[in-house]
Amino acid sequence: MVFIVIDGLDASGKSTQALILYRFLQSRGKSILLRIHPSNDNPFGSNARRFLYARGRRAHFAAALFYLLDVIRSILLFSWRRYDYIIFVRYLMGSAYLPAPLHRLAYHFFAITVPTPEFMFFLDVKPEEAYRRIIRTRRRLEMFESLEELRKVRLKALYLALIDKWIIIDANKPIEIIELEIREKLL
Image (cartoon, rainbow, N blue to C red; front, side):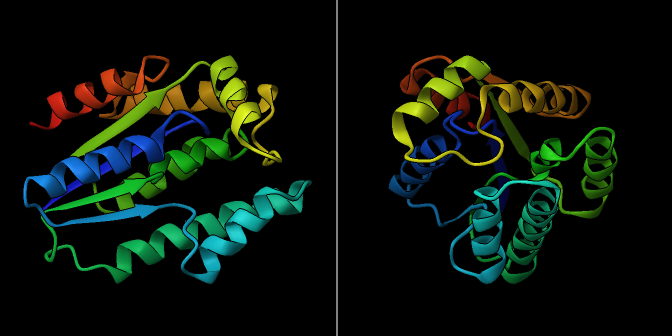
């Protein structure tokens, strides 16, 4: 089993790249589990998503807590031996959405607590590009999708990616180029 994480800012192309990779591996006869967080198949993921559209400190805390429970649920529920590949969209980098310095503490705590992926891809997109994509494709914004929040989160996430074994990929490039870079690292 190969455990892969694809993470990055909102609108960095995480889900797009995960789906492309899923289809590619499936075409090669591989069995794959794909989990996108927050997920919509359980109350933890649904509540995390709901609180992302709310405002304020309590909503921020609730979104983080439900997100964490959603990821832990995915880890606990799915047997790691039944698939050739497991792909998670969002994992440890959710810590970057926490206030400083809590983001570092949370990241390090979970990094030593949860299973370590063989491949961790951080899709690095400029906040301005992420914001442009968000405005173009979404009807309403989540609490972290303002340009200011995207800038803050990117700085924290890049710091975390650089101190760990993340493969940082420039997600400002065309989808096809990113896809090839991910495949190149995996194969």
